[in-house]
Amino acid sequence: MKRVIVILHSFSPADTHLCMAASKPFNDNECDVCGSNHFFPTRGYYVCRNCGTVGEQVYVDSSYDISGNSIRQPSQYSSIGKKLTRTGNLGSEIGYFRANRFTTIHGKTLSPQKMWKFKRLRDHYHNRSKNASSQTHLRTFIIFNRISSKLEVPNSVKERASYLYWKLCNDHEDKITNHVLLIALCLLYAVKETGSKSPLKFQEIVHSFNAAGHRVTNKNILRLAKELEIPLNKTPIRKSEDYVERIASIIVSHSEIKHTVPERYGLSLKIYKALLINTSTEFLSFLSKKERGGMQPYALAVSVAYIADRAISRFLKKIPVLTQRKVADLTNGKEFTVRDHCYKLLSKAFEEHKTALFDKISLTLTTWKKN
Image (tube, rainbow, N blue to C red; front, side, top):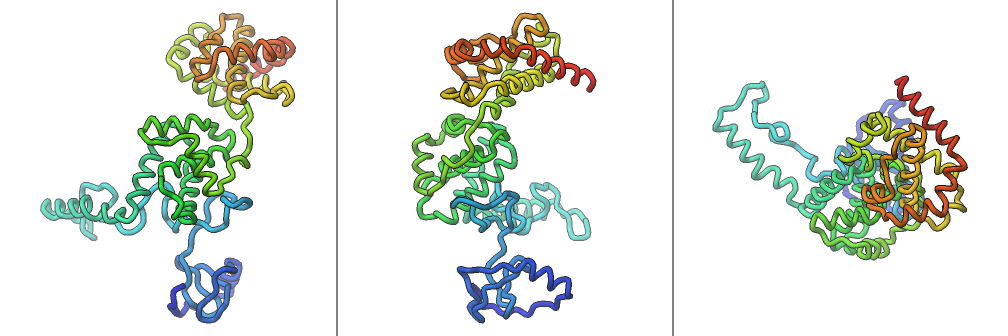
């Protein structure tokens, strides 16, 4: 703690009430001057409420609910104004970011010689000096942003993974030797936390990092999680419902399906996707946990998508768009798994509940026609 005494500006009664409400007791840290452990945040720092000693820097709370296990402590590791997914974004700038034209404070354009001088100063010295002490983090986040864009990871998941990265870097700096492996672990944990918002599989994350040329394996991620005491097994278990929307998006985005659906069903791709999602979700609601026992959630969701297409074709009295082989190839599944699921469970359940499925398809089509 810095031994700097400051004279605080006078507060009105309302300001005093706000400062008392924001007062935060520190059990581990005490004021070096008076021994008090009560501080309040002001101008980016915690200040002792008793004597006015300036304490540690304020770290803003993230937008997530932080409570519970060891990975979720109330301490935050992002400074005010700092973006979690970037480095070197705090501090002053020479002109606007990536600006090619420089002006004076009065708005007058600089001469070409001075403009070239400031552009060179910004690009070759200023921007590099801002990231001089965090080159490792800079390279890690460049890799992370590329991979998360390829996987279409939502911003909320990216920010959560970035927050976990900074927290673990601060808490376990001596244990971390591979920062790319660490960001892969943080992405996996954030994905498992969010449930149906980002239903990525473990193997997809590993494959994406390997495709980018980085040595990330399942075993290495699990070993690092064990060393850092990150409870991956305490995150929510996936259900087949979590994968329905993603599987429908994969099927609809294929070039062959884009041509086949309008020709065979006479429907737009948006309506067909909505039919797949609603029919699959409705069909899964008829399957109990006991009936699903032993079936992998993703594989079951792929098989249900095939059944949903069969229901749509029966309702429209057309030839089905999807076959067992095609749906398996499009979703990186196995044809024999789809066949096995249909033979043991799904075909029988479809015949039992086809009336309810036809009603759901009819309702979906009616809703889309109204809109």
